[in-house]
Length: 266
Image (tube, rainbow, N blue to C red; front, side, top):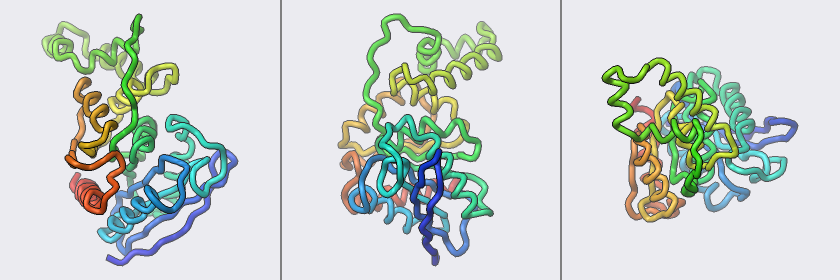
C-alpha cells in the first residue's frame, strides 16, 4: 500500500518536539506510536524505527515516531524514562489531530522507552495496546518492611490468595478496589523500585500487551523473570538469539512482522 510521510513540530510544556508520521493511503483505525529511548540521532536505533514505520505503513497502519524532550531534535533537558508522560500525551494528541479517523493507539517502545510506555499506558484510555521490547527495569532491592503497596504487589503472584477470593473467604469487591487503588499509587510513586512500579502499571492497564524479548539480552532475562514472578497477563514472543536492541536485519524484520500481525489481529 502507498503511504506518505510528514514531518511534525508540536509543543509539550513549553518545549518544541519533533516527530515524523507515516500515513497509509487507506489507514486502519488503530495507530502505532513509537517512543524513542535515548539522546541519539538518525542512525542506530532511530534507523530501526524508520524502517519499522515504513513496513507497518505499507500494511495500512499509521505510525508516528517522535523525540521526547532532551532527545534527538526536540528541545528541553534530558529526562529519565519515568518522566516523559507529558511528552507521550502531547504526541498522542498530535497523532489524533493528524489522523482524525483513528480510534485508538498502540504504544511501542524499546528498552527504556518500553519502560516509559508501560508506566504511561494505564493513565490514558486512548491507549488500547502496548508493545514492549526488552524493557529495562533492573531488579528490585528487597523491601525490609513492606507497606500496603508492596503487600498488594506481592499478592499478584500468589495463587493461594486468589483461591481465597474464589471461595468467598475474601471480600472480592473490596479487595479488588483496594488492589487497584494501591497499584495506581504504586505506579506513580517514585520512591518505589522501578520494577515494582512497572508491574503495578501493567496490572492496571486494561488493554492488550505484547512483550517481545531478545533471548540473548540481560534486559530480556530480567523482565521475563519479573513478569513470571507476578503472573502478568500478556502475549510473549521470544527471538532467541537477538540482543537487547535487535540490531541485525533478520531480528529487526522479525520484530516488524510480529508487530504488524499483532496489531491487526485483536
